Length: 369
Image 1 (cartoon, rainbow, N blue to C red):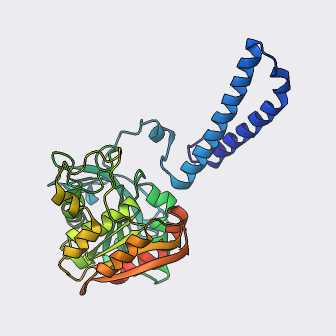
Image 2 (cartoon, one colour):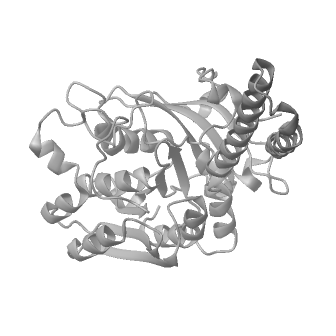
């Protein structure tokens, strides 16, 4: 039974209910002061608490998909697999697995598209990160064999995993349905987590004497995508999307690298690099580097280049509303800015699922093949 299965969650809930009932039933019998009675009460309380926390943890993981399997939870998922499709690999991107969408006829790439599991290596940053690439059905259809496609990088939040973008936020399926109904153009999606150095939250920063995460996303990644897939080499050919930490990275990288990305969408983005135990010392006392990591500061000094930005927030439930309004005011033409401001919505998957379909339509109108 998988970590995210309904059966495991149901069993955990059932165990919690039964242990609670057992605690109530046996408590009078264990009311004595003997060591056996005391140990019995302690055992029942501990068992009930463990079951309760397990149920809550499993429910949270099922909703947010922090871990995709038992092996992932216990740190045993270390293998990146083996290359199975050399025709789609390059020096920068190695295909290690592939899967298809659960749609009628989806086993055929020209009908349901294809999701490639890939290992991406940055030539300049020397960072290698696992991710997924969604190739739409049109990519495999004969009439489009000489056609380029627009592409967007998509990042999770921290400490999310790239699978969240497929299983939890349904990016490939949403893009498939939106393109099938003519609401957006077919688009390649390159899906990763922002954490590209172990489990450290690098905030997409080039850390002195540390991981060069900004260089990986701003320079290496677009070059790798363009050299491997049929994607143009102009900024209007590529977009950057992310939620939470990923949204912060998307806005910042697009502001710093307008020569690489023509559009960026930050869902529930924040605007200043986090500073906590998960990040460690990002700037090593370098004030200029810290200022560069501030998105609002970057927008104040950015030379407008025709970049399009989309930001999202909620009137009630999101902590980034004030920062989002400041960002909107800082965008100067010919750069453009759009927004999605919900009446209410928290910092969670449910909110982002409400924003992703219109965001993809917006992105489709801002980047091109």
